[in-house]
Image 1 (cartoon, rainbow, N blue to C red):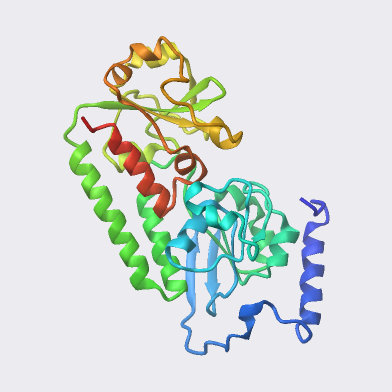
Image 2: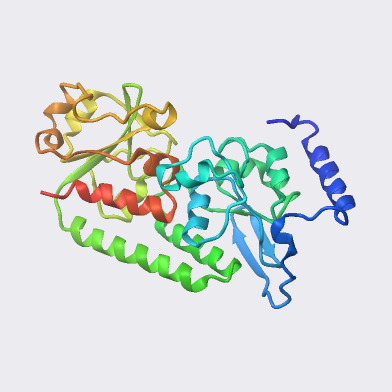
Length: 325
């Protein structure tokens, strides 16, 4: 990040003052030529960090989290700026788009690059929450209230609410409602399958040969709470990267289904592990392995995002693989 933390607020203020002085000389963006929308009804969005007032239709949006990029994509809203360090395959078209400003890392946005985007709306999650005050000096900023440590409580409801909030802001309520209806239908179909099945599942994160599990109160708690999957382990853990476990733990738990999320593949751009490359004799003694129920999940959907319309659908598709004969 270019700003020194001691002077970053002053730097932002100076940049904003300069922008005001130059307003008469330089257009904000190509979209700034759009005539003012005098009939726009202001929208107030409440979130965990405060209330954000949107007084006119946003024309230039910076999305500082991949979940947010997907929300905009689903609603056909252009993205002006985004981090390009970890872009999931279903958003690949944005990574090389020359007209989209790279705003730095997902967990550490570059304030100078965000400012260079000249946004009139900024979208963030808890990963960028500590930059909220700085970002509000640049443009109105909305925090997506997803909990990456504990998704047990209303995870899917939060996703649907954010869709509707963005629909209100961009006057796309009908399209947003359509996306919400699609989620409702997919969740309903999933519950019809999972709720009456006896199988118990374990969600495992793979990281360079080590494993972590995710229980009811974790980043994947919604898989159990909202999608009806029965947990193989009663352990509760809210750590962002799960509870470290051993192969012996997996064998003792003996799940009927194992969902493996390969963090190493995402973070180090390696091929995703598979049954052939996973040479673990204890894991092969589980019911899940013997019955062909070890599911190598879409790691980008589960790990990079997991809280957007597209990633939720991909996660559900993976979940259902564990229940197919």
